[in-house]
Structure formats: C-alpha cells, structure tokens
Image 1 (tube, helix red, strand yellow):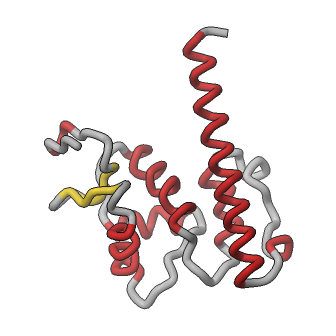
Image 2 (cartoon, rainbow, N blue to C red; image 1 turned 30 degrees about the horizontal axis):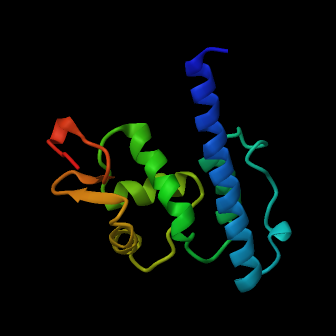
Length: 145
C-alpha cells in the first residue's frame, strides 16, 4: 500500500470515528431529552450509502430539536468543502435540509446565523460571500486566516 493510500485510509478512519462519536453523543442527548433512538432509526449510515452526512439524515429527520453543535460543525464543513466556496445562511439551511437536517425555527436563516455565530471559532463570515472555514485560506475572495 502506498503512503498516499495509507494516509487516505487513516483520514477516512478518523472521519468515521468522529461520526460515530457524534452519533453516540446524539443518542445520549436524545435519551436524556426524548424517546429512545431505536424508535426513530430505520437506516444506518452504511445502509444509506456510507457517507457521514447521509447517515445522519435518518437520525435528524425524526427529531424536533436542532442538532447539537458537535454534529452541525462537521456537516457544515463538509458542505462548504464540497462546493469549495462560501455559503450563505440560506444556502446552508437548504443544503442541510437536503440531508434531512431541518433547522427548526420561525426564521431558519436567522437561526442559522445565530448557530454560525456560536461556531465563529470554526467559521468566518466573508462579507458578501457567505461562511467559510476559519482556518482555510480562500484565494478567490482574498481570505487569509
């Protein structure tokens, strides 16, 4: 196995371990504040295609609460990096909804803005562009961390 293949495998392993940790945290919180997760889960992430965000679609579709920050951060990071350009609050709300993660609020875009502000250690709002990863340079808009 080449060094690059090994590094790719280790990165994937780390992402999967983080996803499992996030799901376990969700289950813990759900048991504390809601019904048993077995009643709402019908598909695991492997059954849904194996992508980290896709597995969470089936978890959050059945809940009434917004997902915790520990879950939102990697999802939003994945969404932004998949496009490799900043995303507005509305774009984030719509992209999360496409994964079954609905922001529950009278004004979901405003709520997303509040959530992003609370995650300002991870994301930066580039004026006129949208949210970007705080620690990632983006030459196309002149952003340097």
